[in-house]
Length: 228
Image (cartoon, rainbow, N blue to C red; front, side, top):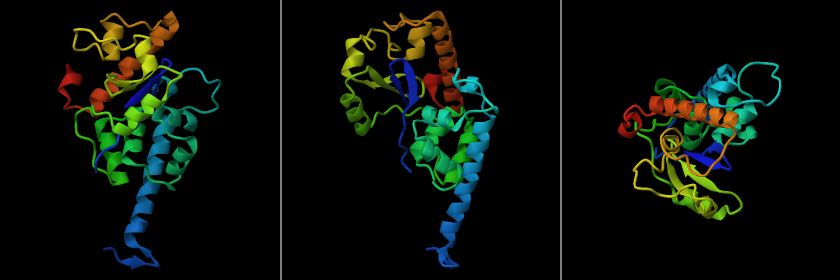
């Protein structure tokens, strides 16, 4: 899922439901987990370094000495701290299912790549349909944010929840059309709401939406609504 806060999308974490012999004073399962975490960290780091910023909607941020996404950029896209991501890449921390999903989405991973990542982390992949349930904890957090208009989106950029500031700006005014809650539909087909962007910002936002929908269709191949 993702936050849309002040016109900037920041992915939200979606929670997925999901006797060993001792060896040198440590269990074999613990050693296996450490190896898997190290391999997972290497995969994440290499994928980050291969991902070009424009592929995931990152623009600007000054001159780059090397190609690929910076660690802090991926952390922001995935909604985690830079330190947490650093520890994962170093194999010192195994991500939760929700963080793993956010990282895979931020990196625009294919379904096969995502499933491989889940295997390394020891989790079952999310089914081939977009999760569309907003947790109670996420809803309470949205309600507590009062200073800025905020909404929570699923992988198709359909609004699942919003705060009073968002509602006051008429960002989420309902209509008779069943797709009114979908941001890409509003931008490309509908009225677009009351958000105004410069031509340059609007073009970048449209490219971001196209990339997000393409990534979502790869991640969730069995989702009928996304395919339509």
